Each structure stands twice: as C-alpha cells, then as structure tokens.
Length: 175
Image (cartoon, rainbow, N blue to C red; front, side, top):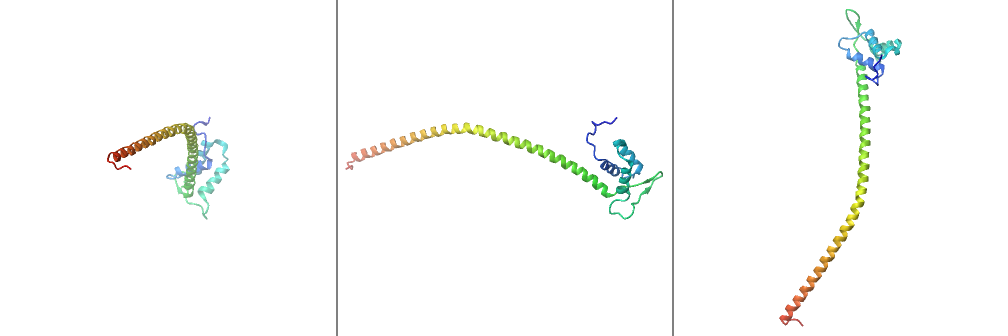
C-alpha cells in the first residue's frame, strides 16, 4: 500500500529519474538501477518504453552529442555518470519549485498587508470623525481665549491711555 500522506505531491517521474541519476553520479548507475528506483516510487504506472527512452535520450545520447557517451566498467555491469545537462535540469526544477513557493508566500503576505492597510484606513476614518468634533471644540475654546486676550489687551491699553492722560494733566501739559 502506498503512503500518500508522506509525499502528497510527487514530482514528475522524469525529474525523479534525473534526481536519482545525479544523486548516484559518484558510483555510477545502470539502466536496471534506474528502472527499479522509478518502479519503486511510481509503481507499474510508468511504461518501460518511456524509461528506456529517458535512459537513451538523457543518459546515453543527450541532445547536442553526436556520439554515445562513455561509461565505466564495473565487475557486474557498465555504469554511467549523468551529463551536466541533467544536473542543470534538476537544479532548474528545484529553483522553479522554490520560486513558486516564494511567490505564493508573497501573495499571501501582500493580502495580509492590504487587509491591514484597509483596517488602518477604516480606523483612521472613524477616529478622524471624532477628532474633527474635538477639533471644533478646541477651536471654540481657542476663539474664546483669543477674545478674552483681545478684550484684556484693549482694557490694558485703555488704562494706559488714561494713566498717560492723568500724568499729562498732573504736569499741566494736556490741552
């Protein structure tokens, strides 16, 4: 029985095969090793013809090569080492997966930021209405203070004028 909870989203079998080849590049691998590995993960769902085609096109005769790649002999079989293009394909796939994950996280983060900004805008508008009322009260208070100061200044000025008049009268200078 397969454990679907362990790896709910399997990568494509071609990537799994390429990853197997890259991970076993030190000691080399045979076509039988690759077939057994893929069958153990994906079961009988992968046709042997597809596996043979993958082995021939990606390992033995990769694109851009006129002749078959060399291999080294083991006591049991001929083992192959993956070409660098296969390593690049695995790396590109991993980077693409990471980029998709990062873009999903960025999308979620942007939604959270937009939600926070909408809440902040709403709160600002609601508090702004209360502050406008408070500001009107403060303006009224400030106007009354200003009026009082103006009245006080007028009285002091009037008093100063009267004192000066009295001074001038006492000195008999006032006409």
